[in-house]
Image 1 (tube, rainbow over the protein chains, first blue to last red):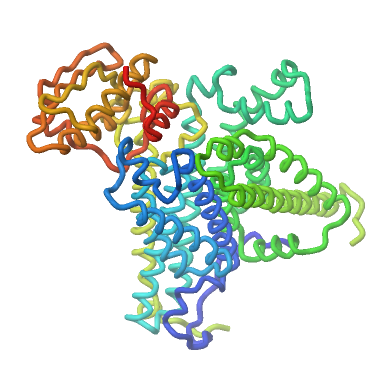
Image 2 (spheres, each protein chain N blue to C red; image 1 turned 45 degrees about the vertical axis):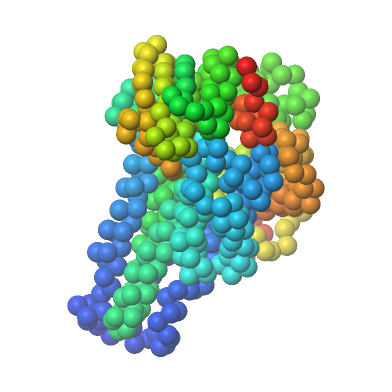
Length: 379
Length: 181
């Protein structure tokens, strides 16, 4: 049976084995935070690789600050400092991916905002979300560390309390993100079938399957325009609500896969990183176990089909190709790594999507059979 | 069964400090996302792919709250050093001529950034600047270097530098191929 509540029960301080105060820097005890941190790290790697590719459109990355300074407001630091900060940020992404720990994520809360100041012309929305999340983890982690240092007896209560508020804060950031993304789309450009930026997302599969453009657009465009707003506003409210979290996660995954298939890796990966935080600990463990389990044939076929479709779209999408072809500094190895990362990320989320869908189908069948609406299913 | 816990001594201060920190950060995050509709400086608000204009004039129900000037664009009609010409002044003048020929307008923050660069290029530098707003209002500064408000710019604020995009012209500037005329 799936748990619907996973808030920790009453804390018995006497039952907790003594551990050093710096244990509060570690999030390893909560799988949801590990998953969040690992996906956030993956998003950071996506961002930094894309940042390097973007800067190379204007000259060698090693001189990006000097290249931009005559035109855009930047901090008056040498290019080497900017390059160093961005490479450090990339390294932090790799380290966090391998060791998804709270103190490392907290350190990112110090490093990342400085990294943004050296390239203020390229502070996208996902950068702000990532910085806000890392700063939140840093501040609440510091709060716990200070409290444990000052009042060692309150260690157990502190651990539960600070982690709970970290989770609440991060889920709040995710909800606010979806809410404002949805609100922003109530504008004449988005709602216009001619000017809407959803056109690119709809035209990509039409072109891949060589469908007749007019009828296919007629069928897909308006649902895409209004569906996007409905999904974004819906996710803002239904993701945090435990009863609807799993359905919202599936909707969110299906919603973000088209963006990933357009070669945009940073934002979808980052926002999807918040999803595990909305699950109970038990659900998170079950999701991970299901993702690691050997898939049934239909599930494997669905994953491979979805992944093949997405990867085909990524390789045809204009965004990565634009970055590679307009670079003034040819870096074929970086291009290959970037494209490979996009493919692998899509494969990962396609797999998770199919796993969550199969899980929900199983729950529905179980619920229906429990009410006598379906014959009992063999295990 | 658990023994009774003395909550007065064990309760974590996260109970009151946690919501304060979370509330504070969330409020900043929310204000940053409200800023595109009010014209306040902001960075990375969640308007990506939405088609929302920088001053949100095309929004159905949140347009027209002009509390700031973050969505203000101008055409630079004239930028002329009063003394000896400097490289920043010459480059900016060439760039704006190219934009004017295509009807492209520049964000006010970017104009101020360049004005500050030109004024800082030499001691006692002076620049005559003529701007035209999108509503057709012309503003003339006989010596913009003497206008402190025109020398202050936001370092971290997100806006498209030009409208429509001036990416190709920017690229020409960076690779040193801006036309002379």
